[in-house]
Image (cartoon, rainbow, N blue to C red; front, side, top):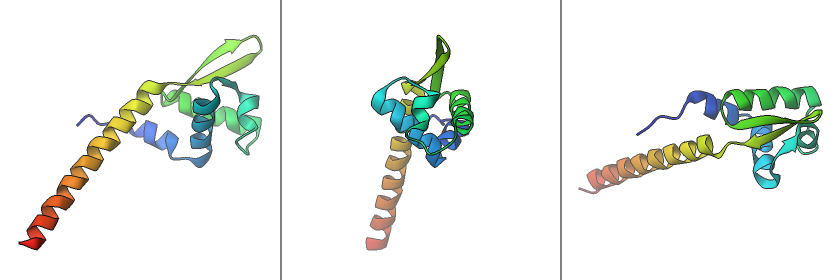
Length: 104
């Protein structure tokens, strides 16, 4: 089972950062100002959250004039999803073994 980096789960563990990722998934690339319309934080706080998400590999940014547009990077999220699915299968197998043991 391939381990997914802790920075990814740490980045997604904050409610505001998770809201940012959900917003970017739903509407596509957005400016920091657009992100603050959905996440109840200041522009400076949103910028900090976005930079942390970028350092974890969850989002990327590009300059468009004076604005910076933020986009979700799907590869790390797909890796996290695969990792959690594998972990879930392991837990299911362990519960099945325990159930079989108890029923004997």
